[in-house]
Length: 226
Image (cartoon, rainbow, N blue to C red; front, side, top):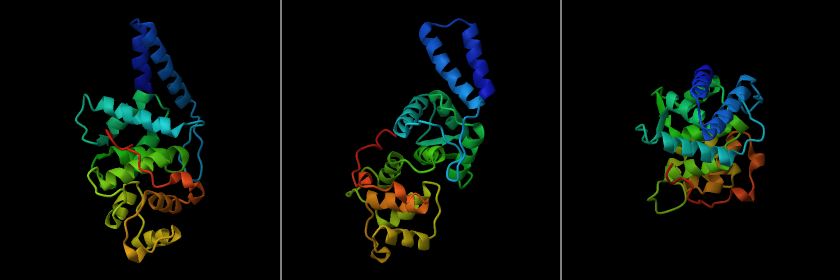
């Protein structure tokens, strides 16, 4: 993918381009150079990490790229490996091809060849920084509930589904333990707030130290327009 993108950009340069196009080529070539130098950082939690990544900005950029791609392809809220590669190319973010394939496979548990876009985006944030970004969790939470839901809380019956959308597959026993750690009674089957949902995810992934009052129950319309 790197070689193909480099050739495409070099061909564009050779054909004569405007100043605006040149600036865009410089930006994309810079991303390619960074990727070829393999400036990734491996850790126990994440497969790679790029220094100084603004995850909120990354999530926004990926969503914009998805919207742009959907103008020329019928996506219906899903992506293939090819779509994902094109999205990453569009934002010029240095994600190694191997990592893209691994992440896609982690979400595509049924080997269907395409995956839910928001599930994929959430998993990317985990791969990049070793934990799920709060904005990505909010997107999964809200879209699992649905736009027409009468409440902002997640029905207990959808808790397991929402967790699996993150590429996690805990047993019911594990979920019960996480609910208890979050101060809830698993036997009550009460709806789950966003704060409790976040607490469960961070406990499951060993990152409960990131829990704070800022993770509250506020569900501000982030899920609209994918």
